[in-house]
Amino acid sequence: MQNLNQSRPLSPALLEQQALADRFLAVRTQTQALAAPLSAEDAQIQSMPDVSPTKWHLAHSTWFFETFILKALDATYKIFDADFHFLFNSYYEAEGPRHPRPQRGLLSRPPLSQVLDYRHHVTDAVNARIEGWADREDWPDIAALIELGCHHEEQHQELLLTDIKHVLSCNPLAPGYASPFPKAMQDIPAATWQKIPEGLTEIGHRPPGFAFDNEGPRHKVWLHEAALSSRLVTTGEFLEFIEDGGYQNPMLWLSEGWDWVKSRNRTAPLYWSRQEDGWQIFTLYGRQPINWSEPLCHINLYEADAFATWAGARLPREEELEYATIASLTAQEDHRALHRAEEPPRLHPSPARQIGNTPFTQLSGAVWHWTASAYSAYPGFRTAAGAIGEYNGKFMCNQYVLRGGSCITPKVHWRPSYRNFFPAHAQWQFSGFRLAKDI
Image (tube, rainbow, N blue to C red; front, side, top):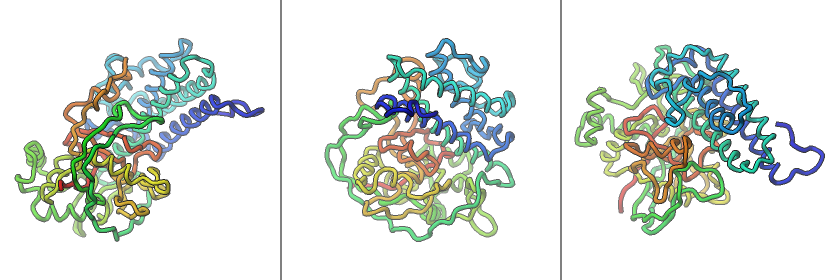
């Protein structure tokens, strides 16, 4: 978007408007950049029901802007293709029926080229209206919807990478999404126990700034005296669990977890394989030897809880992780530095390294942290009206909270109050954990 007024200084309102336009275009551009290394065949595949094809991610994130911005707010908008409303809805009951999620990989039509045309059509239309709607009384509400759409698309950027990793892992050639695999340090700080003091504290989003509805309202919680490990559990530490018969000992596992182990004959984390020359792991760079110093990744809650039991510890609660994250932030070490200290960003979690004098490492930007906290509403939570209210609230059942973001979480997307959530069996997300214990 060009400068809205190049002849004189812009008003604060126009500066905000231009900043939103720049952000919108940057998000849309980044999604297509992530898809660029993939062929049309790559973008078509759905390797399991939890995975969505890259083509579907490209289309659904566009559907969101078309449905909730263009169609809802402008009667003159020309719909790109009326059939797309059915094909690319995800779970919004208020928007009508949709194509079944497990069958998204069967959508060979429309072709990828048409989906990209759809993206250009909607991107241009939204961009034009950001400039044209400057004087509308409801502009603050429109701007909030566009910002929500940007964060929604950033979620799909992360899912695009998570999903294509699973897709490529199913290919016996073990092709990589990217190359070359970045070198990683081997020496890491020793894990130490860092105290979480007992007392009353607050968690949840603190305005201003964007947050999803499930991050608030901000509220008081009581912290019991506890300790958190200074870093994440590593692959090497989990190997000790495996070699000690961790996957064969039912006393370590939750009942559902043990059923999961037996029914799937599991003996190691997702993407691990024992080759003739040792253990390897499938990554977005293809199959690689496991670095035993890197954070454990792609495990589910059952595996995390079993390891914690084996180690004589437990999983942290989400309020403990948020407290530790906030306590670690300083003027010199803000959440961007904690989130991702490495540039250019890696597509695989790297070993821990000390950042300044914070007592914790890897609170964000390595792997998502499983917590012992069930995903539920904060006190005072209210679901928004209409289809937007379906975004988070209706999933507050039979899921667990994950915190911290991963190496593939968009850099500007994370914040200390961010709550992700998945069912206990989910492995394909970039998820790991750190230990906690009561004092």
